Image (cartoon, rainbow, N blue to C red):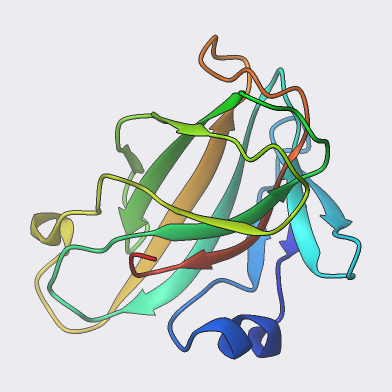
Length: 163
């Protein structure tokens, strides 16, 4: 499954930096589904109750820690709920490494929001040399007891810097 995320023009209008426009996952049982918000902004929809992930890929040459931020919205309004998200990374086709799962407070509305993972991809994980392919996985651990929001987590953009 290939999911289209927010367009470059949409993301650039908010900030100029690296982001993901496409994500993929060939396993339909663990892939999110394609959706959009009320303004037509494309998103990958991660349901509650199951673990879903999407892989993004970009060229990478910097030798510094890599912070990752997400733009998203929820498709239902629920107050005082949480999401359990996890970031995985791989360079040049190596096995994915997973950072610790993080619990975030979910918004109680359907508006677009931004969140940064507390953990960064460490510079020490970047291979020697100048040009690499960085793949990241954004996973919702919807079956985790810390994930209490019953709605879909709808990912619109992935940014490689802290918001």
